[in-house]
Image 1 (tube, rainbow, N blue to C red):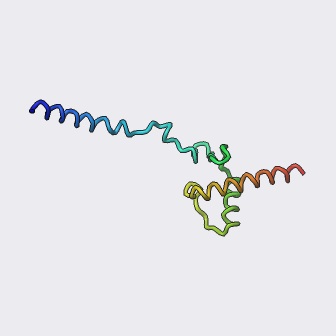
Image 2: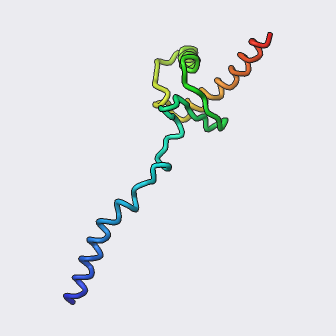
Image 3: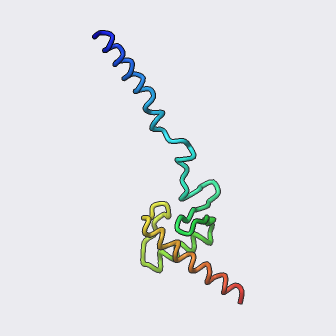
Length: 103
């Protein structure tokens, strides 16, 4: 009986040391595909492409918010539904902008 308690104690102690390692995610898994701050790029999962978040993108985003009579919300804090709506609008307007520059 004493030996069983000793093994149980050892097992519990080993579990306590190993469980944080089992729960920890590798750095690659934690990578945020939504916003890559170093490159100022934002991933659009709906169209599966990246956009450089520069002055032009910020201007377009603020225009989109204003057209919908919404107060400014940092893109990172947008709900998924709103992000999808923004990128749909953005892709439609990118095509428009390209055609305007061609003429």
